[in-house]
Length: 285
Ligand code: SAM
Image 1 (spheres, rainbow, N blue to C red):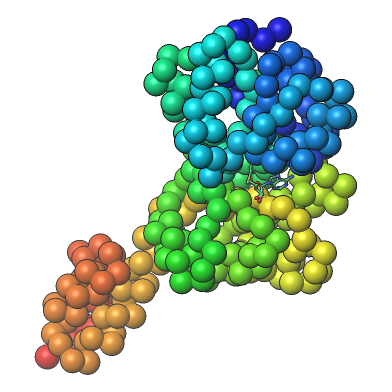
Image 2: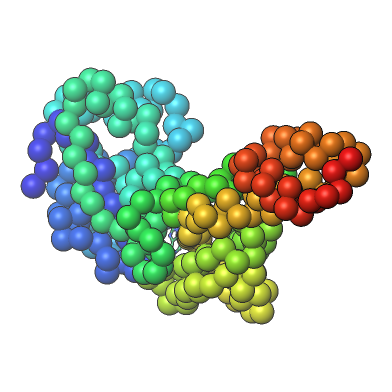
């Protein structure tokens, strides 16, 4: 039973309609109004559970006046359920403004939990789940995407991304370049649906897997990237810095070369100096 003046945030299935919870179906049936991201899309689900509650449209571009109307209804004691096209509302989906304003007005906001693609994918990834960061969708444009990935290259927590059929190959290819071809990546495609598939492997193997069969590039994706290994990262930086030292050493003193290489790469200066001393022993000008 729904309570008066309450906004319910109701999770819906991410593909398999049988994943709707009993409580979600009851609330959707019982509330006075359902606010849906796409009213036509939600009809399929609502019909499958015989819900005839009136549905209005609510999305991130909803005018303030439309949000106001929902808040007014709640204040007048009506109950409203917010649903998105799939999964948990507000997770890369509309609803933030509505929930924020409802909270500011001390209205009751109650979650009806259920599926979310990110948790569903994490639970079967085989990658560390003790600490993770949800990054949502990467930028569409290549340069912005690569920049964003570079900022995440040293992230030690598992990273979860959403991706669409249009960019899956480009994004995973960029991940392989920026994070390194050895980084472990899990791809979850079409979770809970008929053509569900999963792949866990090194970034380079993921690129190959996607490229080997165009069908594997279709549908909806969650891409999970294992966090950077701190020791490996340090080793990578050190090796990169030593390459820089070798180049600079032809032009400047070893001390200067080490200092510049450490600034450029972020590698530890003392360790670099020791390695450079060993490598160039005797040939310092
Ligand atoms: N609110 C949703 C949730 O809780 O997961 C996410 C909505 S977001 C607009 C849609 C994206 O979620 C898709 O592009 C895809 O990255 C991911 N996604 C949703 N359903 C999925 C599924 N069945 N399999 C894989 N990824 C899915």
